[in-house]
Length: 566
Image (cartoon, rainbow, N blue to C red; front, top):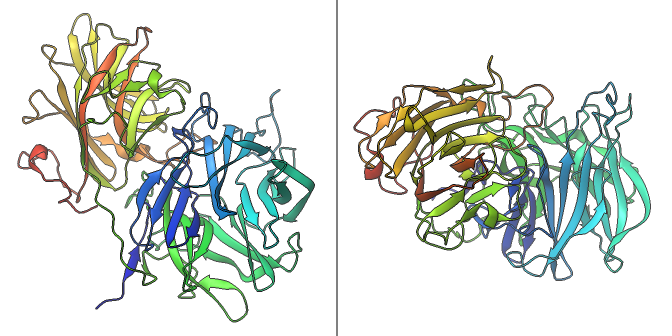
């Protein structure tokens, strides 16, 4: 029998900044959600091999309101821990990104200034109702809570320094937290200034063998990313660096499948095996762009005789296949490829943007068996976008939906969208022109092109019947099609560049920390809220296809779960 293995990434698609905790025989990983609502994804496993999306705890306005938060702002780097019979979740809500220029502030508002607020919520159950938040501080991002053996608790976070000529990433600061007083108390101490590669962030503290161990992420969250380790006999330092400094990185290894490795957290099994979850990405072959965003992987670690942590193979690089801990296998039922919207609750794979008031954006009860989207603001809005989508989690997929929509004005649109953020998307939509009537066209927002947006010619569609819309995506190539009966498909001739739906495709200086989504959208810029009803949504991962438009590939005839991932 072959030894059981974990195959990375364990959380494919946009699932960055992992924090892991074990409670009994259960493992939970929390990841960032940025501007997508509800906030924070928590996945669950019992064997570290199989994972399921369990909950999103920040799901009401009193906990999280992202209206006005910019692209790739919102919820950053959650920290999930368990102590005193409670789950503790720390997170940042970034309200303004600013710039990271080293020349200092410019303009009256200070371009390098940022607004990030750190909060704490608790719950006795990981998938139950979480408390309203306690505001902790706003001095930097990536907060983490450490529970010491004596019961005292300490918050660490990176410190932001906006002043001209200073290192923006000014080190890791530590302060005690009083649960009884619901606030931070005592002095603030800068315990670690980082190494030469800079961008010191993402702290986590552990205690073992009389030492406090500190791991941080450094080198930035792109190809220079790394996991740094240091230790000290005293919590407040001084901290000595690991003999190899960086215990996991792919920064000098372009040949490694998992790039951008960093931002890590540790857990152990009941038998004492040590595993480290970390951020990674899988760029599109030949293009180097990460449409899947930053994902979560896991590595087997060992404590060496010198008291330092290293990867099990001693190489310090991320592996796609990792020895499993030998726990009883615990697979979960596969998610259905097709959602028919028969429940009054939105299926867990789907999210929307920014608003804590989903009833303003969509309904699953207004027309039973359909997802009704109310026409709201433009795709560039930072407030009320009527857009419901799911993550792209493989390099190749097929997505299909059916929309019932009869616009009466060119300001009314609805359809199928491949989306990264407000400036990067491809949108196959129905609208209306006085001289054409109801029609279909593709609108693209292109961040790195000569023109920022592009439109195909309108294609008239007769009558008022629902229209089936389809997307076929293979690595960096996207085709759209439509059908009036769900069987015979008409293809748009345009070969669209799907690589723009990536972290790397961007104007200089902008944050790009999420990943590509595919879903449904509806706009009514006239303000009348004209709705669109979506009957189903189908998403299937599959192998690469040389030409998905070939007639022998009839999408509705395929069976769920038969196609391997690309």
